[in-house]
Length: 439
Ligand code: NAP
Image 1 (cartoon, helix red, strand yellow):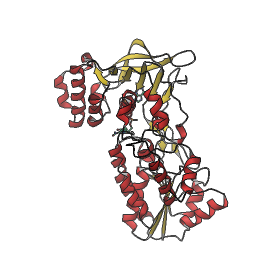
Image 2 (cartoon, helix red, strand yellow):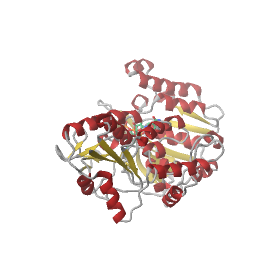
Image 3 (cartoon, helix red, strand yellow):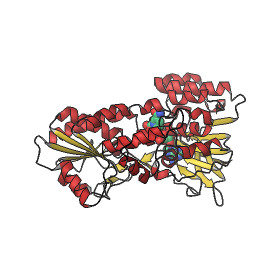
Image 4 (tube, protein in one colour):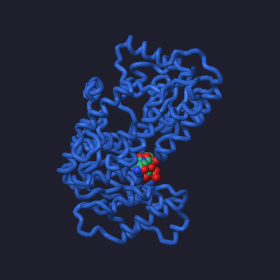
């Protein structure tokens, strides 16, 4: 019997487990280990709460978890409760699929002022991630600056701009819904350091901004390149830029909230005495390589909060080489530490924070193939039984998939009308719900 430990139960972890099942059939035991008592990683805590159709991919993961060779060890943190070295002793292969849960730092003066928030924290807050439940973002001002021109910036801008009733049917955390409903936000400034042709936003997500009940997007006509230049764009990007052209042509009408796209603006400092009062930007132009080049002309935009959506980094785990420049584990095509190490990585921990949920699937299949090539025969390891013994000796309470089902049932039962669930945001509440056999 081969024993595979997958650390992280987000998309990369589940696709790796699925691939190992397909590759090894009944000749494998796969343990999905997660530091939270709940599975699904970014699907639960990253995908926007008003994008429930994307979250439906968890039904596929449920099928994987239900397979007889797969076990879930929630509430177990690798590096704290068990080391990578110990897992290597217990398993034939250890796959790191821990994603990229930390913010890429906004390295400008004033970035540590209260009211400057990274997207991991802000998104985690409205999605009910236990790490960010106490965030309390300052929503008392009229203008919020959102840095970045990717899909996360769009998610954040949309959540800030929506009317309370537009969250119907979403699983936005209750602790976020109230403050967002009473927020004074009237302007969301989306700051892009390059231009409309360089955005990393996809058409479906961009198009949603045109259909918000109280908010409308604004694009300055002067920021748009000549129409003929769009012909050189790949079709998806052309669609996105066409949407921006539509926003510029339409204007904001009489909607009270404006989502303002400010292109060619690079953040250079956050200003304020005790909290954010403004963001200083430098106007930019594109240089010959397509990078943002400062023009020397700066402008201060008053705002009460800054959400930095400039990408993510993986978090290091003791015993593993980490590439600080790239913000992910040092690896070669998913192999960590060279042939024979038994260590692999998948998803954002391997590639960095790019691509869609589905991009993780081929990653998982490639890792399964590599494990098969490296491990023609099992080596008599103890796998999950050994892990269970070790955790019991250390008094660590692991949460099984059946336990998670009880947490899930309790979250579903306490949902607001029309909402799929009301997530628990405290670990102790999750553990308590996992014990309740009524759930
Ligand atoms: P992203 O797509 O990499 O976008 C990051 C943005 O930040 C870019 O516009 C980048 O500009 C900008 N940026 C980086 N460093 C900066 C700096 N120092 N100052 C100013 N701007 C800076 O990252 P993301 O938005 O975090 O998304 C991560 C991944 O998740 C992406 O693959 C995304 O598509 C995916 N995602 C998908 C959905 C969805 O499908 N609904 C939702 C959310 C996220 P430059 O281009 O100039 O570097």
